Length: 231
Image (tube, rainbow, N blue to C red; front, side):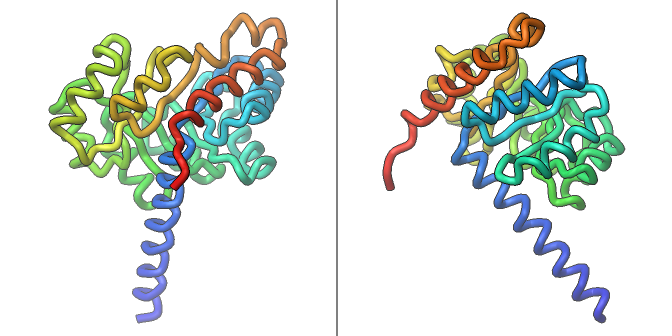
């Protein structure tokens, strides 16, 4: 009996954690993908993005020792939602969650990943490119659906169209989102946007120009702030 109660409490806590993460994403609206091949650059890059006001970061599979880094960033910046991008298996999702990841992102549909996230209390977003894939992701239990690659799918107009037919689905625009169109994606119906190269430019990383990356992050957060109205 005690074990049954403990399982029930755990399930409630898992659901509450996932709901809090979703609420934060709905407010912040932007996730930054941290992508670098040198460990030291990853730390500098993350600090630069966070200094620019972004509070949701996803650590890419290209990052050396990424699970260790997820743990480091999670502990150093408790106010920041840290997750893993480009997760390909349930095992990778387990390792990321154990390291402290609150968000698990994959570019395609994988039921094992969804199940791991549901048991581990992490918010899960799965990639889709067609209405059928979107509905399959929802049926799997994905909390959000990544429309990827969004620029090839039709940009904001694609989101606007699918949102009309699937109004309850929470979409994340992913793949080529730029500063000039970030607001357009949100206005078209995306709950959030995922930003990579437009923010974490490889040339700037090679130069160690962290100040410019911070300035870019500020520009993105300022754009998003224009969409927020007082309640």
